[in-house]
Image (cartoon, rainbow, N blue to C red; front, side):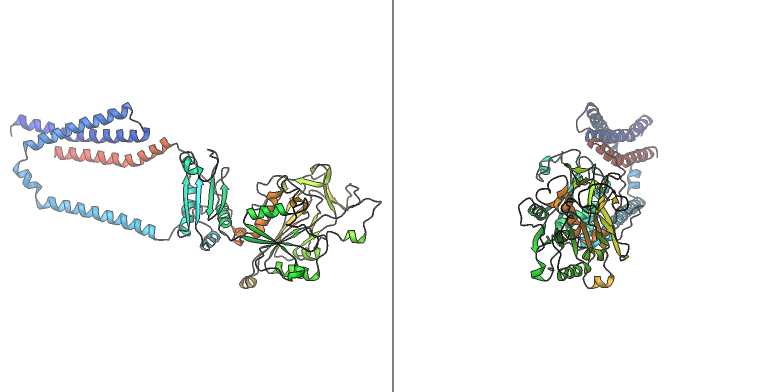
Length: 550
């Protein structure tokens, strides 16, 4: 080959890496910009055209080089055994690498061995939740409504529930704005600010709102328990002048019965004087304002029921009051018993007084305190607004009680200086130091006792007991006022709940949030995939240059 022709060939060869780099980079950047912008802009069009022109030039150069042919010794060199050996080694390494990556991925997905190295173990469900999920025998569907890109913690939490449930729990996260038609099938008003999970099992459904704080394992497991469990059965004691679930008048509990039914809780009356036993399917026994004392047999039956892990709601009615010119008779003084012959065994004693609040009450009755002063309790008082009660009594905790009992007041009067427990039942409302109990006064208590191991082996569960010194707040005339209905539902729900919830750890999920628009999400995808491809292009150009100059 003469010198001018050789120089021309070298110049053409030097164009190969340049044209290859321009073609690949222009096409890659143009395609990436089109993916990000979702439209064919001038810049995108220019890059695609540049890639096309450089590709045509590259083909032309390649054609010219091949037309001139290779020297015989170069062709022979390509066919040398060493070339084939290098090619075989390269292919072998490629196959081994692919096999290693594929095998590692298979083992990682098929193995159940996991390590959670986060500080609060937020990627691991609690032991009690896992045990509860193992007991599920019906399919559960979790649908999260989240506008925009869902946080990583939510996706991880859903994956954990799917993993431990062995397929019984299915999950999905939808954007109710982008998937508005599908979201509408859930019967929800679409809101860009609202974030919630809809938990479904059969015809049962429960919504969990997490608009203000991160979705917790505790809330989600509670919701799953409520939709998956069998209907709860509560019995209302009768035969002593109690408020009746069959009474539709103002003093009846028919509205409360319907409220419970709407929440998968069935109600039945129970007359112990006839049955002589508390039914085995009784999840909660409700004693709603008896006007007369229970018999010794009935007291014994309730004592035994509590001792073996039964759950009871006591709604004690008010002490009768009068005026100085009309003293109470012995019979009147015995009306609306405190049931201390039962409650004393559980560390409580209901007093014969009237709780008054001069500044926070309903209407003109200072003996009907309205309050929002609650002891924090996630299942009962969290997020609860004002409730009110008609002439409640104070409750005293006995010093001599079993050390295994856990007691906590849950409802108090609001005022400290202007509320007290009035012992004068002749309506002379005045605080008497040493006689009356100063405010804030507690008039509702929660009692909880874990069952001893030997009793657990016999099938006994933990005992839960709630005492309110008023039943009127749940009657038909008052239940829909303030948050009385919610309070009534909360206390029965807590009493009827599954045991695991008491022990759920309240792990706080610290969410490091990065909200991205859809365009920003596409930019992240491009960066993640373009960066390694960019290095591949640079490597290809360098390799071509070395071949040309070699």
